[in-house]
Length: 278
Image (cartoon, rainbow, N blue to C red; front, side):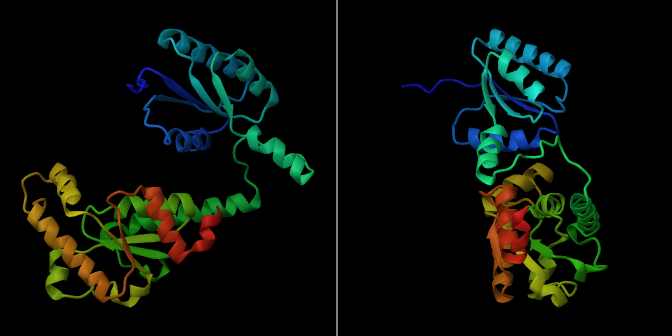
């Protein structure tokens, strides 16, 4: 039996804030299916007028596609929520109230029903911390600076194009982690030891590796037909980097089949388990 095509079906993520929560939660659910519907995010739907407009858009899409859209919503304003639920000819999945209402009953108290983020003291501190972490990670990207390296929460090491930069920035933006990253290059393998810059901070190092054939594909896109991108060189660099990390007792994992979120969670589990709480 052939699987139904989902390329002509649309999923909406509607929120009174950025929509990131709705999309993240919705995607986590949608990833349980092989279907690949079209995604549409509609953030900052925080008034009745905007809600009516989005409802009309959702219904129009349903008419054009001949299938009702799926709508993930994170809305706390009761009036806006009622408009979406009442007017949308769609499968509407209310991500907030599915959990808020039973939790209110369990805790014996009502939620604050706040829209988006509010600058209370705790959030302000977290925001400042994340900005500082982002600036730190950008300043210490690709080994461009060794200044204040001791302040790093983690130093990601590995061959070029193994995923160090996106992982370090994700750690900074999402978790306030000061993550530096430093490439291991052929000259390091010839010397047979960690770069002198990293030696005093070996305890902060965490390695990323990657399958040579995948590394070859990535490097081919950047510098096609170069020695840098050759499969033989990729095999050499990966093998040497892994051997070096083993010799120095540096924990490492392969980024080949892992998302940035999975990589970051593994690193946090080892270096800052407290940061897994938010």
